[in-house]
Length: 95
Image (tube, rainbow, N blue to C red; front, top):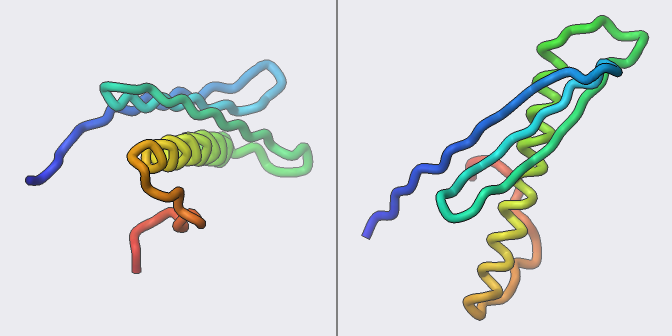
């Protein structure tokens, strides 16, 4: 039987008083909420391009979220009596 769900994600980006771009991402699965955090700051010698800071901070927050999801999945795998995977697959679609 096919399995379909919809998870909702909210991403909030902001710059603090020191010029650091911060990202806060929340994934709501309906049963659990996961929160990821990321940050980026522009090196003083570099040109300030806010979009790059946004991309770095958001990517880092989503990477944090991905690690949490993988940890939760590994815990759930063990909870049903299966062995924890020895290695984690690289993120992305199989080629």
